Image 1 (cartoon, rainbow, N blue to C red):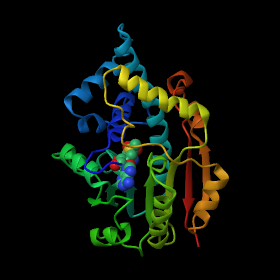
Image 2 (cartoon, rainbow, N blue to C red; image 1 turned 180 degrees about the vertical axis):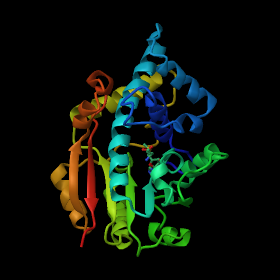
Image 3 (cartoon, rainbow, N blue to C red; image 1 turned 120 degrees about the vertical axis):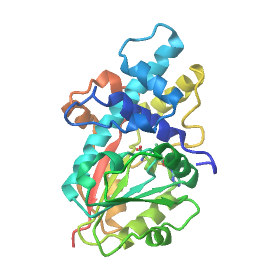
Image 4 (cartoon, rainbow, N blue to C red; image 1 turned 90 degrees about the vertical axis):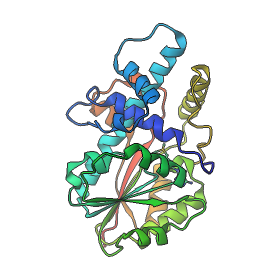
Length: 292
Ligand SMILES: C[S@@+](CC[C@H](N)C(=O)[O-])C[C@H]1O[C@@H](n2cnc3c(N)ncnc32)[C@H](O)[C@@H]1O
């Protein structure tokens, strides 16, 4: 990420959740807070995508398609991650690269959980301004500004009150693609150090996938053609793993994968149309536990 620029991909994925709320995987997914975190112009785009009427102009139509495709991806990964968070039921939750994640504001199950949101300082400043006036439902929310490429995560978490002796669920949603291998390893070293027995890491990760590369190119072209900002301009995709590589990586940090699923399978289970998700290589979700 480029310093001092709030993440644009964080806004795009928040728009995706707002488009999906009440429309996709109803009964399994709900994020009524997402729309409240958006600015007026971003909300107007969401309203148009939610209206379900395909606009006639090609620019508006492309934007409409992009937001609907984003919604399919986001609803799917949100359901899978929420299930893993609930199942672990840990007293601490650290959201790495939190963006406009609304779990601390929408998941009633977090009423007894201390939440720490870690993010790039520019993205976090923007999030805090957007969330002003919203009441969290989690026990507490601490904001920990960290650039994974520059700042020390461990001391920042310690200063914010994270307790390494108490089990933690760590969420790494939609962040791994943007990190270098060195940033991934240094973050995992801190996760390992601060994970008491019972801790869990839930991570979405991209696989090597030609369709995904084309999808990202399409996203950038769409954004330019529709006169919008390219959400990937400052956040390039730089990493991808096979499930075997992910398993080996996490086991090196004392984390055993207990589930690793292709998000396409979850799309199908949720009854979300494949057409809506065709622009994206959805990637996978890994759940890894510290058990001994
Ligand atoms: C696609 S957004 C995902 C946000 C959120 N996890 C979600 O799924 O809604 C990527 C997030 O990674 C964060 N990020 C990317 N590079 C980072 C870095 N070097 N240090 C800290 N955060 C970073 C961005 O600030 C942004 O919030």
